[in-house]
Length: 121
Image (cartoon, rainbow, N blue to C red; front, side, top):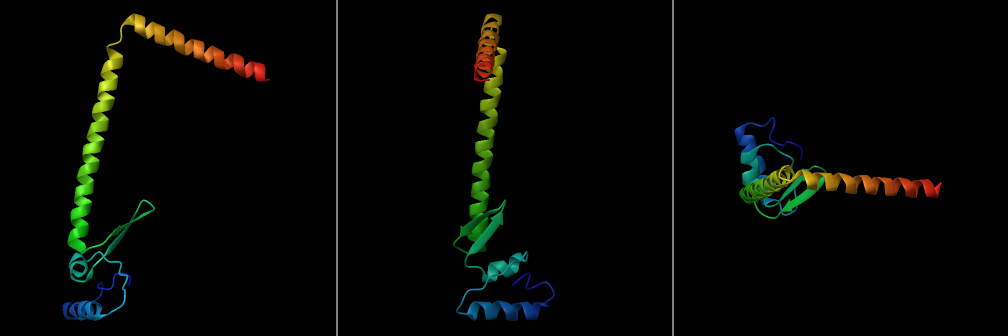
């Protein structure tokens, strides 16, 4: 069912909820009506960024799990930012001699690769 509560009045929504709850089979409903989902959902399938995620539980469980995952992702992103900052700091603290040595190593690697490409021709 696609947005089954969109054009229903409150008594009709309640009737639909009761019918779904009494139904013994499976019902797939796509809805933005959170109240409706809280009343009928026993399992949530989320489609996001071409991925399907399965939450076996009611709508509250789904919200809880999503919130926890979002918090974990935020922590992971913060760690990544810290690592990047540390790398930038480390590079900026390099001495002139270290920077020159790195330039020479890169130039040497480039010339070796160029020589290898010439030999293949």
